[in-house]
Image 1 (spheres, one colour):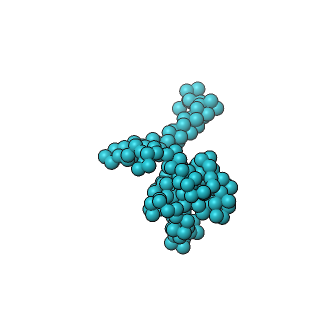
Image 2 (cartoon, helix red, strand yellow; image 1 turned 90 degrees about the vertical axis):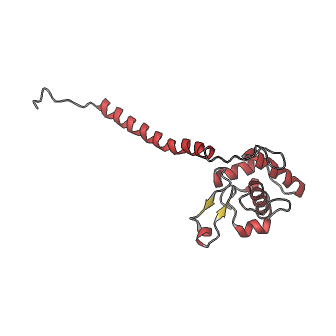
Image 3 (tube, helix red, strand yellow; image 1 turned 60 degrees about the horizontal axis):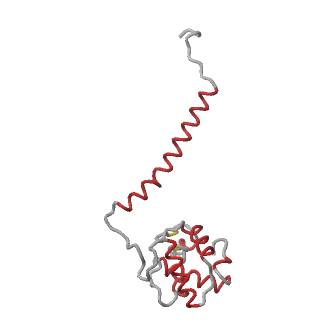
Length: 161
């Protein structure tokens, strides 16, 4: 092709292509997150709107129910301290399980909202809560009981514990 007819790429067109590629990558990363929320609704099962204690059956309700139990049992902790640790440990997923850390390598993976191992959950289980480590209220309450014993309160925990 003669030189006068060749298409010349400008810096702007390279920038536009790079931004388009980056935007596509972001969209691809976001799609699984969007799809995951819709997939749970398509299973045909539904969760009750409230817990048996009457709290909303969501992260806010689980924390508030745990705080009520903790108050009865004189276990210190605040909503903000619990929430901060849950978000760091499990992103609010009550069925989260860690299969890669040193506990998992020993055969006792961390589980639930606050990533508690079975021996710790059993040792710090709070009477009146479920014995299921994945039960959000039982997991939060046992973890807060452990944190109170070890650190004074879940509010004093700012990293893996």
